Picture 1 (tube, protein in one colour):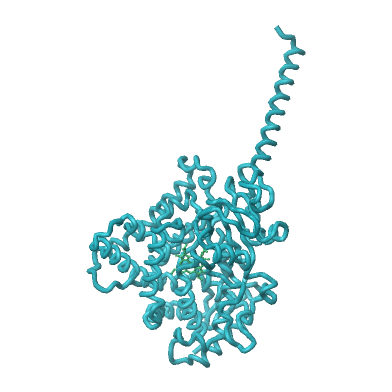
Picture 2: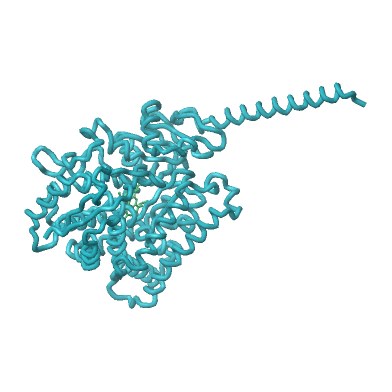
Length: 523
Ligand code: HEM
């Protein structure tokens, strides 16, 4: 039998053994977790075991700014770890263009994660679809649908956009001198434009359907804004945590609403000239079936629902704490919200836009797309809103489709890649005082618009360039010029000293802080 002293010595020894083993294991884990996928992989800041660099993004500093700081130390191409995932960050116009244009195919894939798969019904949408023939087909179909409905015919598109005017005018005129949140006004406008394009119908301007979609957008952001554990700890997806349950319920409700529209279209569409996105896609599917197409699995109803959701709804992707929101609606709403906020903050710029529209368009007709060349200051102001706000500062995450070399580094296939568009839009080498909001950034010495300045890629570029770029530019120019032609927006009484151009980064998006404004009719 052991005496008391001996037994406590054994306990002490085994405790030390456990501590030494634990410390060795921790050091081992630390060393192992720092191992990059290969020697010539881009350098970057050290991360924690399991979590990687994720704790950095829990601060109030937006990720795009944190990345700029790292770029100063490690260069324009560096790496971080998001959980167990090595992720490469690309900064600056030269590197970004080399990756997305010169090596477009290599950088054309998307990451997948639990929430992306859940929300895209197994990657069947365009935004998060992998770079496959099926994805190419759907991108092509959606692009040609946009041409039919919008960008291929100016007059048809102007009619579509301006079909919301009766509701919008009634809404603005009802405000009197009461302060109101302009984001709600912009959301109702954009939802109605895109409902006409996708569903061939309008909602009541700020009625229950618009409120439903606004609630969906808000709920989606709140749900994934802080990330889901199931995205980086695979086993978690089998555990019905409240967050996972909520996301499933949200997805069900969201697609339930899109399905309702699709079912109505299937029942009513007679095969004639298609009027909206759903009808165009249903018609193409029917034609393929009639031709006896061998691969109808490439164009299922799920694919059609997903394309409609990309344009109308919101695609919410989560890469841990870093998540992003893309959709035809949210992007346009955020941009128009920024437009009002910035022009309220800079009333002299608002007055110059209104004066130019008065001079070129007058007061007896609506601005049209052919006016664009004669509205340089207005166009430059809108582009400056888009640059200054950079609503998608880190674009949509990419992934490498094959091993690729860039900047002397090798990036293996399947690596996640974040493209820091903000690093270009705020590059002091490319912009004179980038932190200042000045439409002159987009005007040359002769007063003409600089349509493609070196550091301006808000819609990204290459194989994954925003599919709605032309739709967005045309839609925004029409609404923007009409709005300031007819109304003057100002700060709400008592808020004159507040900054109206303040941003807040939520779920990867750069949004404007919501502040009330007042509106007056100009004539
Ligand atoms: C101001 C408005 C908008 C901005 C700033 C914007 C920006 C972007 C960005 C940065 C991307 C990611 C590109 C990449 O991954 O490299 C994207 C993708 C996309 N956008 Fe937009 N967007 C806007 C409006 C729209 C509109 C109105 C639509 C539809 C009508 C749309 C549809 C899409 C689609 C489908 C994709 C996915 C493309 C793909 O993965 O192949 N966007 N957008």
